[in-house]
Length: 221
Image 1: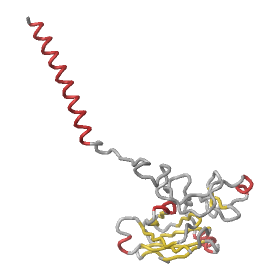
Image 2 (image 1 turned 180 degrees about the vertical axis):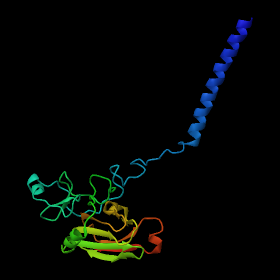
Image 3 (image 1 turned 60 degrees about the horizontal axis):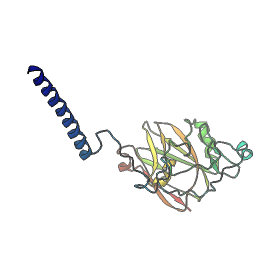
Image 4 (image 1 turned 120 degrees about the vertical axis):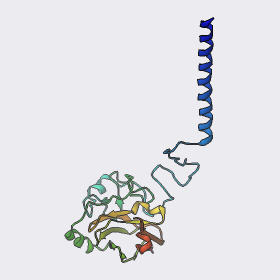
């Protein structure tokens, strides 16, 4: 008799555990993903994204064809770490394809930022006709407006003239690959081809910097 009671209690215990598991599963489905889970939009939810790195429709205007090994062999870079530039002023990746501006800066297809540049190197870059030199501090970007031509090679040089970090970020996500950050009293560069015609605003995305005036615009003719 005692043995039968034990069997019944064990069976009831198993049933109770199963019921708890089922209830927990139902509750989990109702409450959605747990804390810390990132909901990554699918391509159906975000049709503008064609690859994991692309964040907006492209405004690139350069030919997307891969350049030949011969052209790559003759390509140069303006600073250590930046992309190669062909003789016809096309900024390309290591694979020989034009860089994309609508991809995250960490993407292998995005323009690469240089290592920190010395004052002498900055002076050399400043003499190049395709150079756009911008300084930034708590007072804002100087100049805060610049003009380039669509498709033009741009050697973008950003210098922090105070002791703080600043980050140049286009407001248009189709140009996010142009984003460039510098530490205090540091200069870095990126090379890219200017996008389609239009007026594009930008800002420093360090919290509080844009609201104090670190904003500007790029005019593409």
